[in-house]
Length: 324
Image 1 (cartoon, one colour):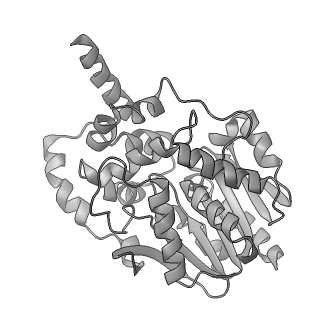
Image 2 (cartoon, rainbow, N blue to C red):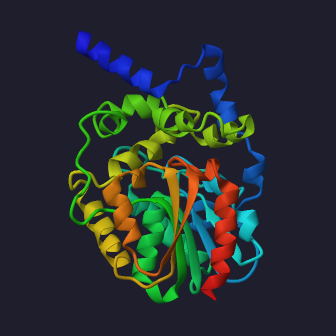
């Protein structure tokens, strides 16, 4: 009994989330409310579901891919720097932002392969075919790298930050403590589906001084209702290749990482300092080993777009024209 109580206290401490009864009563109406950003998006039908995306500009496609637990809103301050350089498209992943949820949400849904396949299908619907530039972050990097790996002749360049890579010699071990150990255990359901731990701790916990009240409403909007609305934010950390699992993702991420180590496709490494993924020396050395790559350093942690959007935007505005 004492062990169970301790586990619950630890989850609540890490989540840092305490909603009053009156606040909880408002969640259904808040979750369904349309935001200003939502109204700026378009919709496309993909595999029987509507996927939302923001689009501006004309010319060759520049595709912005977000990760967990964000949405196309992550790119709101960056796209204006480059929207004169091409057709900027920022999708919401399935079950995130304003894209429809999967009808059979539950354990084992919203996997990397689910997201990848829906986004690849969306690219086809939107005519994203040739001379593509990717700007990618977190799990969006895994989708963008995968598409580039499969279609190298159709890619102009890839700009990435805090990306999902798999070191070929020293893979990341399975965590035994901390938030990711909780997410990847049976305690994850309480931590995330009930207490919204990924959004409240992993995202907002690192951005206290950088996210406005309006931004906080937008980022929380999709995940206000406890339960399956939050499923994508739980599945994503369980999809990270750690200790060789999940095996399918370990193979897929290793495959495109090894390709990146050889590919001459132009790359821009947006190096967030102090960062998170590339704060590990072996991962930083891996990223810096990629050929035909420029590097720019910007201040920020994992969600660097919320901290240094203008620095990122200016770097992209200098780099994209060099792609020809």
